[in-house]
Image (cartoon, rainbow, N blue to C red; front, side, top):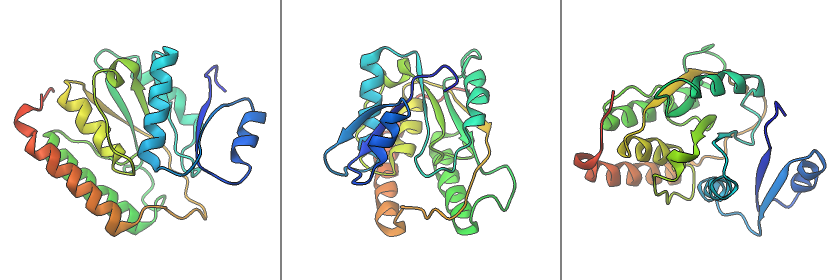
Length: 205
């Protein structure tokens, strides 16, 4: 699609997802059992580094991201010092995202922005363009949904810029798989780890 190779990480699904994706022409990498979003993304990142891509586009599997926004993200990635490109879902149509999810994401983004000392309007968006040079310059360990925050903070600590680009969000009947208490604790632990490392973080413009 769009001249891009499609790689899907099948995180232990037991339905026909992997078969359907393969038949559609995607390269499928499968985990034998479910290991969490963070682990799935890190598997994809490792493949991207091995394959020698210049950059990768990450798209969540819940159907909320509009593929028509990919060219806009890639265009932003071509700009000088673009760094990590993050799709911003929060400055669009107010009713596009369920209200509770909207304000949870906004609060988490404000927290990340405070630690990063720069505005990152939608730090939890999984719709991104990540240069392979960035991936090779950071060490990631998150296994679950806190991976989105870890990538942003690790990129900033390594001296990369973070660029936000407005994107459309699609919300139909899919329910979020985030568990507020468990994943909230993981988010806070990650923030504390980076807060401890804050004096060593490099803060660019």
